[in-house]
Image: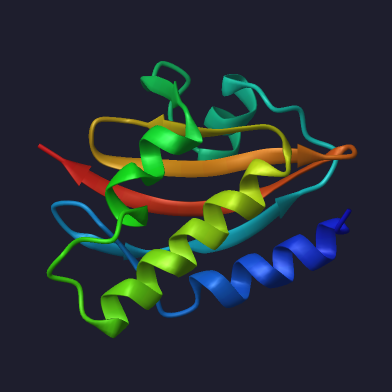
Length: 130
């Protein structure tokens, strides 16, 4: 199995220059949280949002579904991007209890996160859902 550093390095490579599409486009930023517990309270604290901010956990597959499917109209670049998202999803899926947390409404902080040993690693992005 890969180490936390190897996974983080690979996530950095896969996410470099990618923008996650929603009603706007935002980059994906890798993060590592040392000695952190994978639960909604941790995510809220780390996101520096008020404690009453709505938080929703969704499955990795549901979050990545729109960006991992090859469409008939894709050109080579589109297919390459979809492959990067598939690789990213597969890599995060190797983490313990991997899931996606959406924090807030409309302008939503998204944490794609799982545990490895005592630490949490993953990617943060923002989606706009009006």
